[in-house]
Amino acid sequence: MNRHPSPGRLRAWHLAAGAVLLAVLAAGSLFVGVGDLTPAGLLGGRPGDMRLLVESRLPRLLAVLLAGTATSVAGLVMMHITGNRFVSPSTTGTGESAAFGVLLATLFAGGEAVLVKMVMAVGCALLGTFFFVWILRRLTFRDMILVPLVGIMFGGVIGAATTFFAYRADLLQSLGAWTAGDFSGVLRGRYELLWIAGAVTALGYLYADRFTVAGMGRGFAVNLGVRYDRVVNTGLVLVAVITAVVVVTVGQIPFVSLVVPNLVTLALGDNLRHALPATALAGALLVLLCDVAGRLVRFPYEIPVSTVVGVVGSVLFLALLLRGGRRMGLR
Amino acid sequence: MIEIKDVTKRYGETVVLDGVSLTIAPGGVTSVIGANGAGKSTLLSVVSRLVPADGGTVTVDGMDVATTPGDRLARRLAVLRQDNHLSVRLTVRELVAFGRFPHSGGRLTAADRDLVEEAIDYFELGDLADRHLDQLSGGQRQRAHVAMVLCQDTDYVLLDEPLNNLDMRHSVQMMRRLRRMADDYGKTVVMVVHDVNFASCHSDTIVAMKDGSVVAQGTTAEMMTPEVLNAVYDLDIDVHEIGGHRIGVYFS
Ligand SMILES: Nc1ncnc2c1ncn2[C@@H]1O[C@H](COP(=O)(O)OP(=O)(O)OP(=O)(O)O)[C@@H](O)[C@H]1O
Ligand SMILES: [Mg+2]
Image (cartoon, rainbow over all chains, first blue to last red):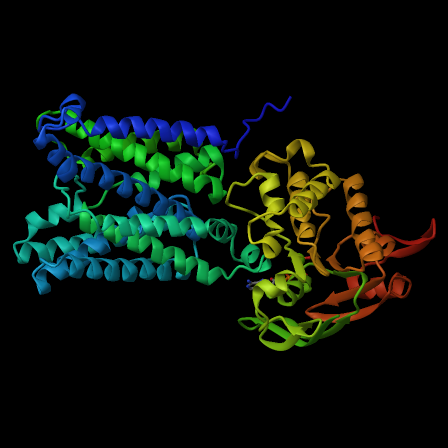
């Protein structure tokens, strides 16, 4: 009878099916790489195999899953607290600010201490994000497209400044590592900060309902007794921390925070209680697929994940605009 | 009891509420009438703390709305705004269920679910409950929003033009529901209406606003007179007694 697409219902089996798919892919990804690692060899107890697995492949897989999950959830949260589907950490200068922070840390603290880098990255990401939101609140003409454009411009300015100082300090090479996301350097001991991003993402789930209410607008939030400003600020901190941690450990991963939440909410609606777990799963899947593809396309050489995601993400984004434009409030 | 004392609101140079004082007794239905731009929505927004006043105070059962914690107030007072545009996509059931948020904080109990389903049924949204709001007609969407506000199940319910977009039958149903909430459950309903005849047939008290001030208030019988209505609307309105109700005739 009801011929409308039946939306908004995330059934348990959807998540389960996605989780199984992810698990299969994840297991498979462990055996993709230059070093020779096979399930048989592993079970046979070849000593080198176990070490390769624990030192390199497993850390890389975990890094991919954590970064994919956290980045997409950050995008989802950002989109809700700003009330704009095209605002995500990649269109607000958050990632660029974090990279600027890493540059500062490298310039003034030598850049060896990872913790210093992270603190600087988080600090700058927070400053950048809050500054953008401050601009946003002062825009009288809050057009759906204008807002992310302002964000992209803002990110561009910070990116240019970062490049300028990096050039002057002869750090352009290192700059590439923070701006172009790449998992090839991930080893045990070099990715663990990402667990912070994972933990923050999990905390975000506790706020799922409040983020949804904030997405309904200040009036709705106040009526329902939700402290709008506090929820928005909490969300901004969450987004900044996740973005900064990912930039410090693997570098910026473009498009994911924009495309994944949009695809998921287009299918499931904006109730974060359903959309957040699905976004987490889909983000992990997309980044893992892109990372494995990047490892296979030019085997034995690697294409950085940011490049692969850039291509896949822009195609997905175009498809999204063409198919879902009306529902996204564009037409 | 809602006590509004000397409330002022300005936007730049324009005075939108000019020292409004008003007491709304608990229980019963109060209609607020007045021309476009009279300040009705602004008054409702100030009372429901959506907009801060520039001067004066509003208390609800003695709680100052400007200082009482928002979550506490949300269990006592609910508000439907005139403009309910939502940019998030939620299903009807999800929206209505958010009405329970002040009570359950997102974890719906069985009793919460019953309230949600009852509201959905009453507003004839059963077949649409799993649809997204952007797939509804204007009147259906309005009913969903009202259902959410009523699901909040508060002692005080403020509704800014609840009849927006509704057809005649749904308008009457809505009014009966509000009447019943006041009569059977002792709720205090304050609503903004443009059709004086709905105000006349379904409310106990009418408050008339003009240019940011309350210009008249009284029982329905006192207010439904040609003199009062002419003064409020600057329009010749005949009042006839039909079926025990005073009906204003102003169409020609
Ligand atoms: N944000 C705002 N900035 C400036 N002026 C405003 C603002 N909101 C309302 N006003 C002005 O305040 C006055 C009262 O507005 P309000 O919305 O309270 O009127 P109303 O009685 O609800 O009218 P209507 O019947 O059209 O809904 C109007 O003149 C309006 O132009
Ligand atoms: Mg109004």
